Image (cartoon, rainbow, N blue to C red; front, side, top):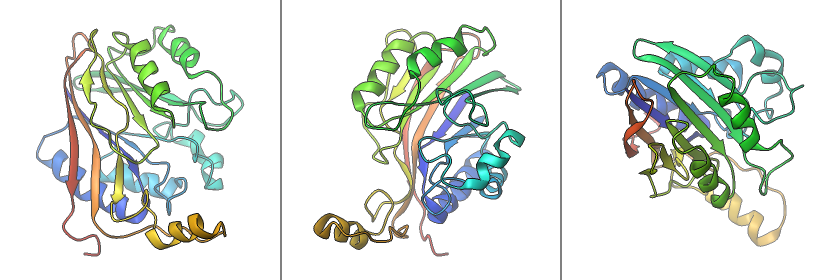
Length: 262
């Protein structure tokens, strides 16, 4: 089974890249299942139900999020209606929505777990214990994908090692910078520290350069508009043995769309 996991989608340029590239890959039969982190899809902050539906139509099977999940207030009111949009599983139990989903596919059941890190981020329960609680229920299928949305490289690597052999893949998101450490860990779990960003590379993490420089140089507030140039999709393509749930291959993906304004 070939699973495409797409790094943080930023604004309309990121959504455009996702639709064009994933649509082509699905039509060509290059992928069987698509997961995308969409917490920056709405103007760079959060995701709305309407934009989520656009991404599902474009080819996403499950959308993960992170620390910006509640930036668009309408999502909190509607997330319980759409189980394919995940919020971090280690957020407080009283939060709306769920942090995991199991999807039946022709190749078998696929479970996606969304977690958020605690280092340099806001309050959350322990992601390691949250992962244990989900995996120990017996509900997940053979194929389990974990998106750890975290700032600290060490926390992501530790999670990969902690879950090695227990899940099919642990992928990091949040930093918007794709790392080059993709690997199959010793017990068969695919791993990468950060998927990267799906959006404008001619930017500072997806935002217009000048506004970010203004903030750093003056300390004064400035609107951080989403940039528009050099738009890429980044992520990984993982091949998983459906019978064992072990990953057999992980490949970094970075593909540019010719013209984001077209």
